[in-house]
Amino acid sequence: MKKTVKLLLVVFLLAIICSVCSNESLATSTLDCSTTLRSGSKGSNVIQLQSELNTIMDCGLSLDGSFGSATKKCVLAFQKAYSLSQDAIVGPNTCKILNKEYLEKIGMSKQPEENT
Image (cartoon, rainbow, N blue to C red; front, side, top):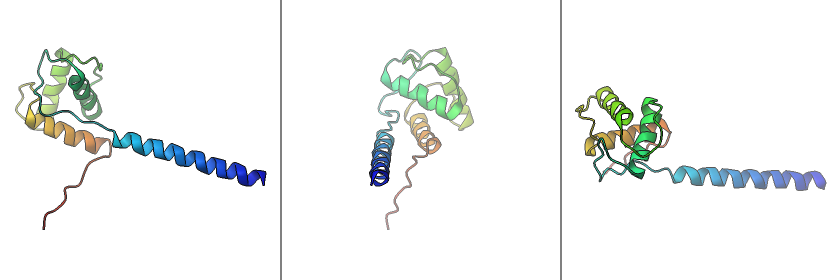
């Protein structure tokens, strides 16, 4: 009887852990592409940019929310690696590709639905 209760408790705890893990992955955010980011930009969107660049390009950026010289250098490297215009500005095109590559890198890429 005690073994059954322990086993049920373990299964129950594993179910809770799996539930929490799957909810965290659903909350993954991406860069807001409605805002253009450039040297001097600040805020939470810059933190997301720095996080995505670290994931994709392994830049080692501090997540400080300040678009400074290190973030600029990494944006330029990203733009070069993905054959984008190398202007160190994160506009709609750079942002879209950053988000796509970031989601693929973390294993959350969405497959487009085909309209037939």
